[in-house]
Every structure is written in C-alpha cells, then in structure tokens.
Length: 287
Image 1: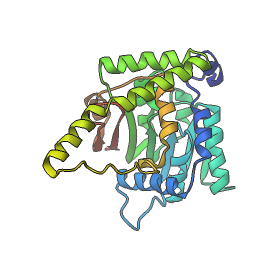
Image 2: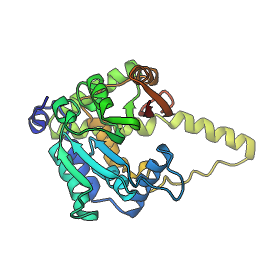
Image 3: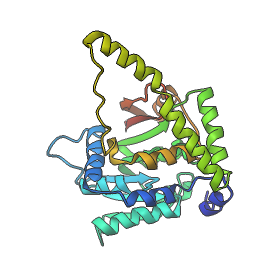
Image 4: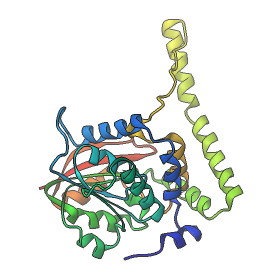
C-alpha cells in the first residue's frame, strides 16, 4: 500500500511531521545525541562498555533521524525509512552530516502499511518504531506488519499512545481540527493547548508546596527543567508533534501485550505513562 504523503498533508489528512523535524535538526547537538544513545542503551539492556556492533537495526518512521544516528553511533548496521519525504530528507541529512558515505546506514522512503516494501527488507536484530505506528491511520495493521521484521530472538522496541478513553477521543478532535484549519486557527489551537498544559498541573503543585511548607516551614525549591529532555528530543517540537499528530490512534498496555504475545513475543520491558497522557514503551523479544 502506498499513497502520497504530500497530498494527505495538503488535504488535512496528515500532519507534516517531516517539516516539524526539520526545525529540530537546527537544535541538534552532542548532548541530545548522547541522550538518545543513553535511551537506547537503557531500553535495549546494552551493558557498559558494550555496543550494537554486529547487529542490524531498522528504524521504522525515522522522523528526524536522531535514533538512527544513535544506533549507528553504537555500531549497528542501520536501515531507516519514513513515509514523509521531509522526514526521509532529515534522516539523510544526519547520515551525511555524521556518517558521510557510510555503506552501513541506508535511508529510504517507505511505509509500515506497505507489505510489499516490508517483505523485501528481511529480518533485523532490532526493530525500532517509537511513537510512529499510531500515526499510520491503520495502527493494528502496522503493528502486525512490523512483527515479521524481527529476527529470531530479536527485539522489538515500540512506543504507542496510551488509551485514555474519552480523553483520547477529545484529543483526537483537537488534532483533526488543527490539521484541517488554516494558519491562524492552528496558532489558536496550539496556544490553547499551551495554556491548558500550563494550568492543569497547578492544583497538584499548590497542594505539594502547601504540604512542604507545613512540614518544613518553607516552600520547596523548584529547579529549572533540564535543557535536554530524556531521549534528546525538544519540548517545543514535541508539543507541536503532539497537537498536530494526525492520524491518531491509541491502545492500552494490556492490548499491546496481548497482541504480541499471541504472535510469539515475550515482553522484556514496559514503561507506562502512568495511565495518562503520552506513550507507553514496550520492548519485546521474538521467541
């Protein structure tokens, strides 16, 4: 299955993920790259002093290309692909910037819904797709399609938006409205979400500070947020990706676990978002 990503973006059926990541590349530095490498080390249980040398890694929906870069820096042979042409260009830019002429890192345009394309790729030691498959427009098909890419005893590392019930339905309406609006309306939607995110934590913060004052006679010091978030990403780009990220589907952790258990996978790691907003991370091993 192949369709025209540019046409989908123009019609409001898809968010311009690649355009967003092109702006992220302007911010990319050694600290962000190191954070991405550390993220892979943690989730893939890479021991100190060890790396991914001799292992193959496919990055499905490579986006900015940051995690393809991290995997290549760790020694893996990397194949990156994305449906969005601008995301493909971003990944190619990182390859050319940090590993020019490298035969062990290929970058292509492709779709997780294109079974003919996927069937030509073969199997990999590590199949990575963080926060991507829920944006394909057919998440359960995509989840099924990537399973055969995992070699025997290989790893599948994915992240899928958490199912919050009615809250997820409301966010879906926000995302659809954003993509089907003009520039002015999009700015209004984005500003509204920023206000919502700023105000929502206030009751918890006030209660926490009041408790701390009662116990210690002073308010708790609130440190500044880290400049580099976990995984080396950027909060502004992540916010835009969240508000605009359409198509949009969700799943409970139990549903993902059952889905891959029935396909011969064992779950090694699960990191949830606490039942709230965000992605649940899974690492499965194919038995």
